[in-house]
Image (cartoon, rainbow, N blue to C red; front, side, top):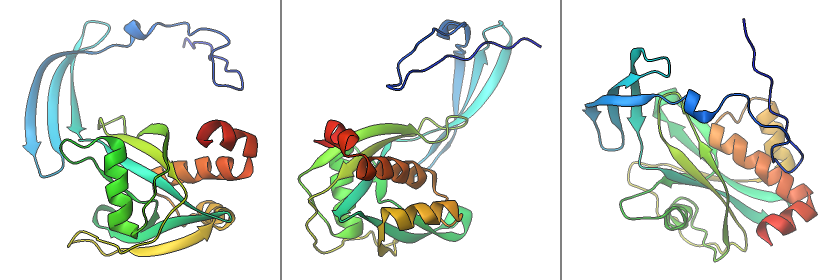
Length: 210
């Protein structure tokens, strides 16, 4: 069995040594595409593709409109989270506020709206700090990750089919919930690890969010 050597990274995330295989050697080429399901949120496709070795195969995947998630920072090491029931996993989840991008919205417009609707809070200080491909094996969903502080409370406006409880946790308590297995939502895990770095590393925070 042949293994390719791993790429080495420096502390800033830049390459120290190049990949041994170019991107083009991995590319799969679409031959045909068929929409097999169309719903209110998701659209499922089955594509016929050519593999890099020339063989023909198939890929099934979901097209998603995109979404945004936010780390709402209340100050004093405290993060605002929400609790809500998620039907696909049949359980109540602890999450960061998030929502899909409605038609014509950009990511910041989406997260401003979702923050106000789900939590009642508003802010004029939003910083996009990263992007998350949530499930690349079967979806093109891209989540835009935001940080917000200088929050001003207000009235919540949840959707008619949503029931949401607000939670305030210190970053230390939230991380303890991760390590105890009580927070398992992927976007929330990623967001809280970012939050821990921002809150605990002042030099990093100043460079990232000012």
